[in-house]
Length: 297
Image 1: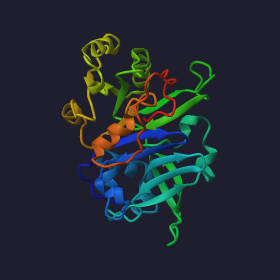
Image 2: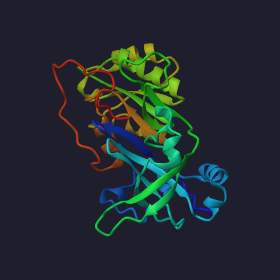
Image 3: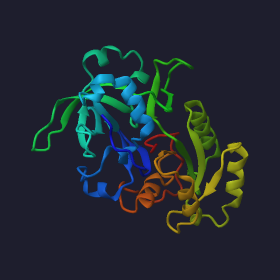
Image 4: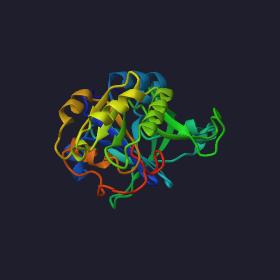
């Protein structure tokens, strides 16, 4: 079944504590009105359509299975948005890991990650009281990239002990901030993570409005970034924001990488044009937190 394909917006993946979310920077989502937000507004395009048709075959053509993108991971399971009718209407559903799909899970990489595109079959449509539909995954569409890191205490190169962060990320923003959170070493480790995951990185030095002279900090980041561009910006004064937005291509999925306090939520809200995530006051006189702890990807 042919689905409409349009130029989508930008998507940002972020995590906070036990949940991971994929945000589409469409202002319509501030009201959670998904009915008029077609699947293409979550990154569906002609390339994904071709892959889904090849994998889904006759079941896809008959709309017995349909595409859904994982937008949230919780301990209780995964949530996705999908187009069950093929008419540019989209609904939320809960992904049930059962049946043949579950039996085929051998490694963490076999599990759905935020950003994944799935082919799913609808088990029920949910209820008017807000109960979400239940969808059974049939396949994970081949990933363009897979952002993952070694789990704490795991052996080097052991695929059984990785922590999946996000899938199908086009660009990762490796962020550090002026002040106590400045850490070129952490940025260097984030860049290694990006290169190993097949993700194109961009280094951001945030909160430059707090530094008397950010140039020495930018030069220090350039010394560890190799060929990766380094950009200084301030969400408060909007310095550097225009250049950042120029670098973010429409339809791309962006991951925000960095320790808590570097300004990921503030950047997300600035790009969206409205509040999608709570922000915290700037930390002063505190030791930076460990790499990626409670970070946004």
